[in-house]
Image (cartoon, helix red, strand yellow):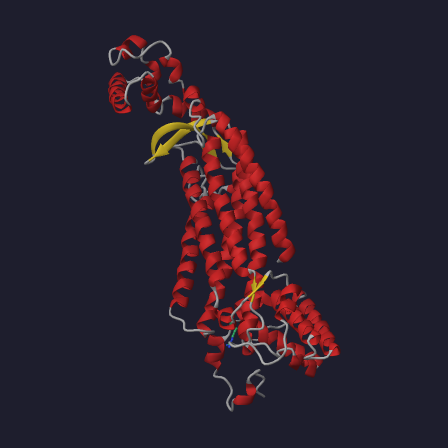
Length: 471
Ligand code: ARG
């Protein structure tokens, strides 16, 4: 018996290899919730428009609800011969309720059906991702507020540059993730367009009501063009692009965590619960989580590249190539969500070695720019001040001393602009406190940035609630 839903046109059974090659059920089974919700809304619309009877719509709804609970209770066998989630569910429905089930696909194609499921799925996952992203941002804010006074070296070229605070460093990451959140809102917008009713390509001759479906499923927009509706995968690309950027940020932070937890830096210590040991070397404590997040970033980039490449040569409208949109997206969503979750907990439990950080800034030349600024404030052009301080630094290095250890009379050999107040000006605490330009690391600026960040975060919390209500 040929139980294919397109059986009418065919004389032969599908080749076994073709069946296996063609099937997407092994991965698109994860769309079962969306598929059932979408079908229920579609059936309700068909009844509302007088295309099927309300008794038929009720039978469909009850049948779909039973299938849903069967799937949830592991009581449903997905069959490869039925290719995908859409046909698995529809076939089982018709087996159960007969003719009414066979009417469900009226005025619908799998092309607009799969598009609907994917839009709903992405909307739901945007809500989940958003929650985890905000949680990570909150952890960064909390850590930053604990370390407003924790002075540490800031780096350029991985060479010590100027003194900053741990709070300032962490807030830089907070801001990157805040931009990721903004991008995520864009992903939601792209996914929040309702494709059903586009049919296979060119709509339908039946009197459907697409607005009804959109309202039932909480979509704020409807595709204005049926061909665009079944061909559009921009929202998939947008999620992948957002995820790639977000993973890139996590990966950069990972690089720092890995460096900072080495003996050479010794800036932080990861909690035992968030580190791993070595099977051979008893002394080891490895930052595997950070390394894995850094490693997984490559794979997420790969999914973005793959999707862009898959779509680039496709003529309108649906082509089977588009079935390839799923595995990469699913893997990206799983990878990013897992990374965000584990990262937040890892940061939350790490110990910052405040003393070690302070030692590093007091035993280096991070305050050289401050010494130059001192001369600038006394009227010397910056380029000249740079030259003078360069000489002071060379002198100190030759003497194996730091700038705070050179006496005033020694300084005065380099410029008569140096006076008593110089030693105060190059004290590390002063150097941080005086960097009070907007966006700088001064304590005052940090307090301001922290308040702003928390306010923004509270606003974004409302956005997450909106996502959740409309997913
Ligand atoms: N499994 C297919 C996919 O994921 C569903 C749509 C198939 N449509 C079709 N006409 N073959 O893209």
